[in-house]
Amino acid sequence: MKLSVKGLAWASAVLWGAALFLTGILNLIFPKYGVAMLDLMRSIYPGYAAISGFLGVIVGTLYALVDGAICGALLAWLYNTFTKPGAAPTPAA
Image 1: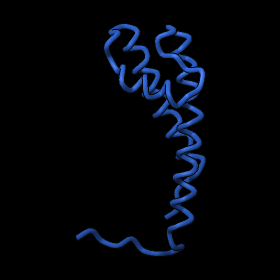
Image 2 (image 1 turned 135 degrees about the vertical axis):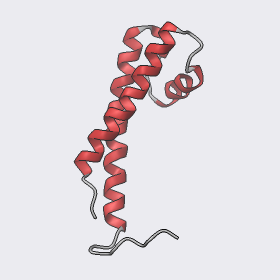
Image 3 (image 1 turned 180 degrees about the horizontal axis):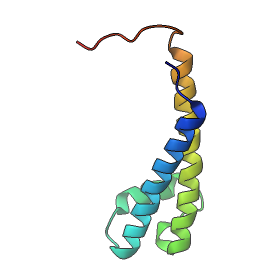
Image 4 (image 1 turned 30 degrees about the vertical axis):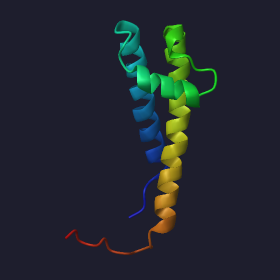
């Protein structure tokens, strides 16, 4: 079974984008919420600052959408590359 590269890219983009968006919004409402995650994302995404208000949340969400799409497409491509065509799945023990 092959994975859809485009489908997994979209799904990963939406999932990761929504996660960072919701964490950022909740952090604006409850300032101590998700601080460790947002600090980590600030160290990864250049120009992203979660504490800069709603604009920072939007910038972080855009970064997460692109990052999620790239990672999802890469995961699907790797999976499709390393699985043998026509191989039946092995039953779990």
